Length: 231
Image (tube, rainbow, N blue to C red; front, side, top):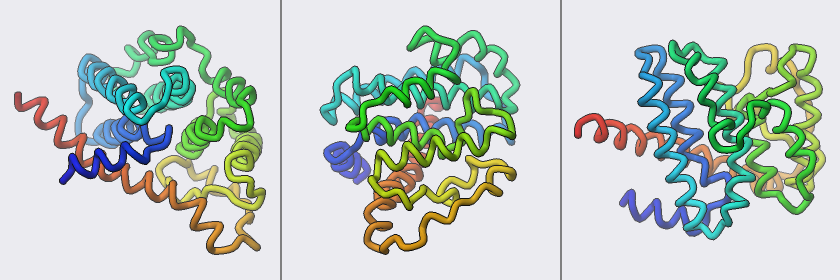
């Protein structure tokens, strides 16, 4: 049954879906730090496996390697930042082994993230969607100061307009409660006023589908990791 669901999903997957396992695993790993701190070698090996699976998924869905790389860069930047800002006891080893360095030969993703986003063509909505998810999940990059919250909101809003063609809509923070600190929750913009229920449904359906896939892959990753250690 799981295999059937997986095959059906691949036939209709978007670019952001190719990174679902990476995003899910990152959250799974960080939440697990409350109980244990896995070794750097194990975490690196798991990411290498999941990145390979992400590439395979993109290829199966008909995306070019160039398109996959365009989407992988913001995910890469988000993973590196999230890990380096975590309480993981071995994160110091990650500093010199960041994904952005391994796959894009850079250690400046915090700035390049926004340069790449700004340089995207308007029709590259699938790539913009990946950037939007990373921003929603808390990526800050060079805008890490408390005084930068407004600037981050403007970037998210401007990017979202280019994805949805709807200037009144934002992705609600409630969909990703773990991605925001308390101060971010104070920044609210009432842009839902006047938006039809149908429009909201059309925009939110892909997001809700992604959340459903998040929990699906959370189950799958638990199963895979358990089987890995049992072998």
